[in-house]
Image (cartoon, one colour):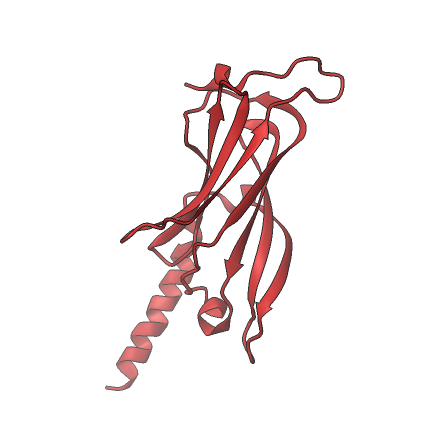
Length: 176
């Protein structure tokens, strides 16, 4: 009788490992590039808690990259991939080349989405355009299925000429 809860836990963990990579709807091949990780809390015999910094290119706007840092839980739950990650996420976006829009986009379109827990929480990076100032605005936040999450961070990228360009495109021309 005592083995039943352990068996149920093992089956649940196995299912979670099989299903979790597809929960966020984002293909991993197009996912972010890990820049580096830094340990923040030492754990004995299990992985440490870390801060991880990633880079992601905006899929609709060539020449813009966003860098974000997320905490990653260590310990047994982090090692098994079932830890609910905290919502403290920071972001910085920059123009890294000539800006070219690949098509029209909506204000608040999702640039990148990632699961931050087994089912209940996801992190999202969304994009908007301040047409008056010709600035792209990026917001990173995490939603929690039950009570939401007020933690967020914002970055802006002025759309500027690059290299031999004399004029920059207007982001407002590409908002639906």
